[in-house]
Length: 331
Image (cartoon, rainbow, N blue to C red; front, side):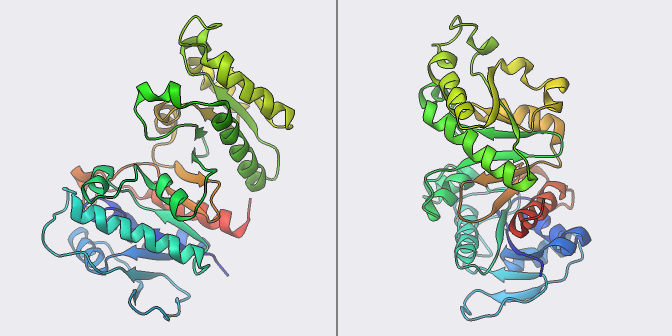
């Protein structure tokens, strides 16, 4: 049987509802997974009508705790989203609170084993903060709710894969947050996951932090020598195929990409700039180290085109398909 994947609607005021509708109607998704959209049925119906998007799904009322999940596409309606106090294209506390409830519901269903994976729609981090929810993003929510202290964010596509040592922090904070332990953990999680998914040991490339990878401590505060290189050496001693620290400005050239299965990047934009340049519409966000499968789109809420029928569903569809692939154990 195909794995059932919970698909959270994301922020209702963004493009998440449209993406969910495109998932429910995509024949390639339906061949590999059973999508269960977690969100607001009224919003989905309104977006479908406004954007003229066809969709078919059974409605499930979340108040019925004993409900049997159907064998086909369905919408798990999470109540509590008021019809007033918010509008498409403008998020705030109301939509931030709603998007958080969708995430909580999906995680709970996954921990109960009622779904085999979770794919998350885009959320607005400022809206979470306005709702009093003190998580900077999805990764931190999933780590907390599943009590996982060994996680990392990986963005993957057919063209390039990048794992991040640090995520949603300011650039000036990166150097002080980097530790040999956190870098080694990211290397190990990436190695373990890719080896399992691809059936062979992956080849990893670790980026330096500073220009020219520090050029023997000429730039920066010697992070390459003090922090990054020791992590690489420890990983090599564990039998992991890894090189680095490599100067970031040459790490992503075509010749190196051809022999690299994944990059270990020191901060958010070091990995996401090349990834989005090469694979904006096809990349998928995966949280490694969780007891459940979690994938996500690699883009934001796109408030400027919300509810207009212009959203590209490629990343969301790819994320659901990857979640199903991981959950079913296929390579």
